[in-house]
Length: 333
Image (tube, rainbow, N blue to C red; front, side, top):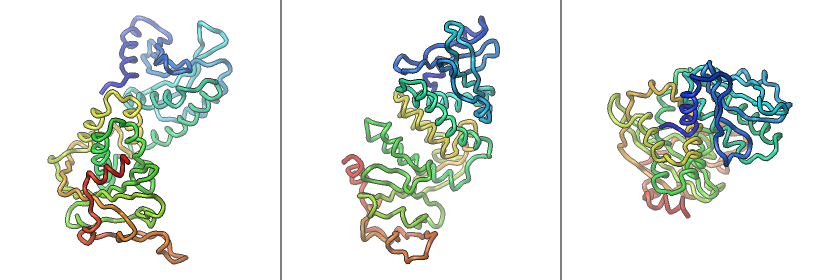
């Protein structure tokens, strides 16, 4: 789906065939700094332009290690005391990522009143994005990572479908950030586990904190038993598309969702790698983790013991099963 910033670029590109120089249009009157969506003509290079008072105060060369994106300054012909900081896309193969990148930069500075705050916000976000952009082209995710991401997205879709505030759903999704649990809020956490094949009723717990309910009021274990087949079932690409449709009209949530997908190593430019593998749900099991749930926690471990991981046999855990309605009652309480 075309985002707001992509629509603006498309409109400007029509005019860029007849002009040269910097052609720009303000992103939104609600954004306090002077932020513009721009095209450099005649090269037709997409860029984000931020108008700032001279001197900008950034060593531009420090940020030109970012893949196919360049920072440069450009004179403001209308005001000699100002200039534009341009964030320029050099390779159109990465248009989708660049759109998400630019909108994230805009949202990070939209309420900044002082130029120092704008600069600080931009530098911070660009530095974080550098790590993400360096991951592109590493031949996609492993099969295990794909399964794990599908499970998290399957739960996320259900979560969004049951709320009127999708941005809160995306904000609680912590799996791409390698947090202890995949979804976290103030008083609850949800750990999503996927299994397949012969061991579809045995799950692996990564550490002693993952199911430790002494730290947070409510921990829920959400398990999906998957049937995985080439050419059959729902693909990663398909479930991502359905979530993007649910987020239509919620630009902040949609942008955050796309950024978290990249944190999870899913890039649109590599989506062809995930065209064939499909996932079907064999079983959906939900467990409320309480003091008596079979688990190992930090308090159970003797001093000097570390790197704890263990497995749980779900057929022995039926006493702790809850219904999906119970889960959402906990989430929305």
